[in-house]
Amino acid sequence: MADYVLVHGAWGGGQTYGEVPDRLRAAGHRVHVCALRGLGSRQGELHPGITLGDHVDDVCEQVAEAGFDRFILAGHSYGGMVISGVATRLGARIDAICFLDAFLPGDDQSLWEITGGFEHGWYIDSQRHTPGLVAPIGSPADFAPVPGQVGYHPLLTLLEAIPFTGEEAKIPRRAYVFANAWEPTPFRKFAEQVKDDPAWEYHDAETDHFVMGGAPEQVANILLGLAE
Image 1 (spheres, helix red, strand yellow):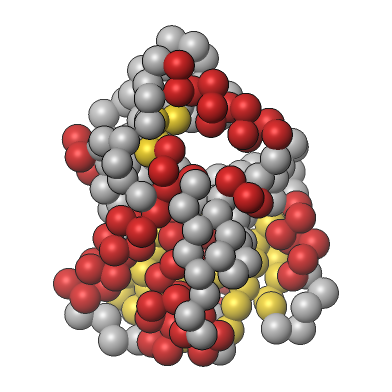
Image 2 (tube, rainbow, N blue to C red):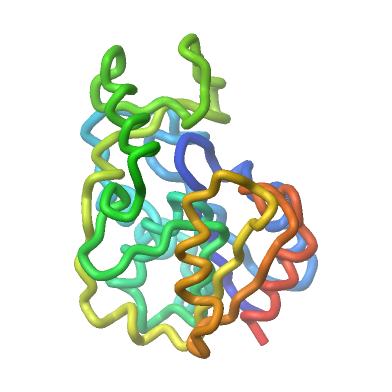
């Protein structure tokens, strides 16, 4: 039996993992789907002061509350930033880490540094009427949050960098899943970075950015394979 810790992306919540957690549980494993403050089920806690470090704290605290000693860690989209931060603290306890069409920062890089002009323009333009908060990319001008599902995202999480500590290097297995049926995508460069690297297990998914919903069987099988 393995323990899984799943981290969602920006704007949404744990529900974006769809049926994947249940598939893992059906195979006999324990699964914790994290809830990040200000997002998803914790939308009521949203405020502009939330940082990336706060979200890393959330995951580390929930791992402790779940009683997991060793675990497999996965993150989707912005969740790649969060799990990278968790790895700098708990790397020696992580059996495998999986980036699900996710940002893959290097040492001391923020999400801002690894995105481009389109994303930067969206983040800044969002500040006109909701200072410190960012509306979902591509949402209409009259965007309204859906309680518990999708809402604004705290800007500071996109600007903070987390330096590597050496703990992240202790993780023995690394996997990347790239959604190749979604354009334009900011994730192709991360896929290209790791696809031929023998230190990584690379997978293409014929689906859009929400790979857990578009290819639940494939995602579950990839995660199950990390427990073997």
